[in-house]
Amino acid sequence: MKLIFLFATFFRIGLFAIGGGLATLPFLFDLADNSDWLTREMIGNMLAVAQSSPGAIGANLSAYTGLQYAYISGAYVAAAGLIAPSIIIIIIVAKTLKAFKESEVIKSLFAGFRPAAAALLSAAGFGAIALSLWNAAAPVWYDFLRWKETLIFLIFFFLIYKFKKHPIIYILAAGIVGVFLKL
Image (cartoon, rainbow, N blue to C red):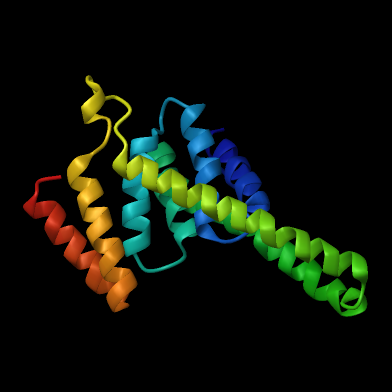
């Protein structure tokens, strides 16, 4: 029963997470808010691992979430549930797009998807920033902002913007800084 729930949940996420792996984050945050086995903090940790692991971020996130919920079989089922709608939709679109590629309705449909995808990605980005830099459980008001993490964020944001080196350099450097600062 757990695996069916997991597959159905991630099938729904895969069906509506238009825009890529990060677009699954709002759905995962909703799942965390409505479950007792997943927290926003766990999603933040999984996101860090998923982004630094090879493979698609959405598939990695779903696999890590499934692993939390139902161990190894959960990881496979959640990843399969996430990618199944894409495979189905791609097959349907490929078969029918040739006939309708000049249709104004289809063009309008895809034009409407773009802002929705941008909104999902923006919500995911802002959610990841808030998760990394904000501590809602802080006992006093001046501890709400995670100061060390905010400083690291600003430094790396500047470095990425200014020098545009390979992402693995920043990931490794941030990991080293995190270990050094005992974050």
